[in-house]
Length: 157
Image (tube, rainbow, N blue to C red; front, side, top):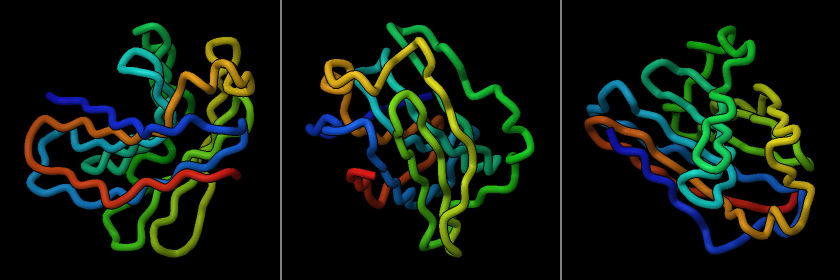
């Protein structure tokens, strides 16, 4: 299995930003065809929202100093199978407000709220010094096949 994190060269200039991922396609993908959007400092420090194409499952991963703090195990099971980002107009959004980030999805019919993740005492994205070390990010986890990412857009929310 491969998990690649692609970081931009730009740090969030505010604690109110939106990052939108156009997920692209998954061709002949194996069991781990997952795309991510969010903020990353490096491979051991990130807050990424994930979308697993095969299961149509969403969630988040918060990793600090290499330790996985949460893998989105809050009550997200009710969203399993409900999110489908395979359509041509599909998008997945990460919207940051201080230490809280909210996921939205556009399955082709307009934006819908999914969930909010609170980083609590783990990472304070409201602190400019902390934010300066992070970059806008997209990521892919794949064990077989091909995944494309069609675009990543970041702006102030």
